[in-house]
Amino acid sequence: MTSAKARYIMIGGFLGAGKTTAVAALARSLTDRGLRVGLITNDQSTQLVDSAVLRAHGFAVEEIAGGCFCCRFDSLNDAARRLTDQTRPDVFIAEPVGSCTDLVATVSYPLRRIYGHDFSIAPLSVMVDPVRAARILGLAEGRSFSPKVVYVYEKQLEEADIIVINKIDVFADADREPLERELRARFPRARVLACSARHGDGLERWFEEIRDAECDVSPTMALDYDRYAEGEALLGWLNCSVHVEAAAVVDGNALLMELTKEISARLEAHSAEIAHLKLTLDSEDHGQGLAVVSLVRGGEVPDLRESLLGSVKVGTLILNLRAEADPSRLRDATEAALEDTSRRHSGLSLTITHLEHFRPGRPEPTHRMAVAG
Image (cartoon, rainbow, N blue to C red):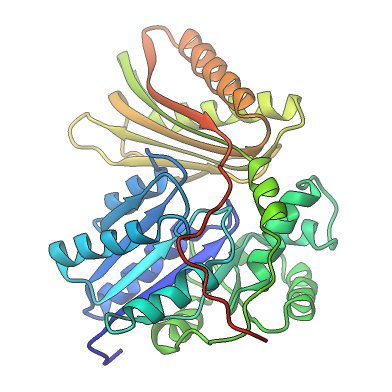
């Protein structure tokens, strides 16, 4: 990375693929090399768990809310300028909305054409959760999404320069080999790699590919925007902030696990397929750290990814929930889980301070630069 231009690296993938963990790992790797890094997160709404987690790791973060990068292209450029004013990053790492596709035509190509004097553009990486990918590609049984949501998922893979199978630490090698073969057969233009963003296995090979290589200019992927919009609109979105206050200290880790299980059970009872449920708890007691819990499918054990060092008396909880369900169902499940959990713990108050629930609107890209085949 000897160019005077800043490097722009975009890491896409469906909800629950582990993008934020990978972004943090890449940012640490680049920082260790003496490079300044700026991170840009993206969501359909505000109050992102991802932003809170990345800031807790000490990174400079800008958050773009209210639509995906393709529809907020000017905001993406504004975010890069703000980060430049703050820390002058050598590398920008952008994490788009997990339900977004067509990123090459609407983000990578426009950045290259309009701001090519400022940025060198890395190949697009698309991460996959191996369990979800195996189910969607017909290699394993289990609940999945409806065909219109699967259309969006497969289009993400179709446009990838690099497909990264994440979470190999929890996926057997015997299952991984058929998945790799199927991905290579179905999406032949992409290089297929495997890693564990959480534990570091396989990361360096991937990082080498995206540190220096340039985004290929290849024919633009065909995309039916009506089907894309319909698929996104089947996903319910909920972002919620909660003030936590207890008469006596509570175990913050256990509280998040309990809430996650409560919400998941309520959604599973209505056959709502969870795409991703993430919670953080930031303790205000003596400057303690952050607890983070993640769940990427219903019926599974929540993953406590980061834990508080001790108990909590006062704090702020952020909850992000995405599922194939009516948004009102997500709201009802969340409110009921908070109420019931508070009732079970004497002296515990869980007060909602912000809650939004909705379906994503139709994607309307600021730019779409097509390359003929």
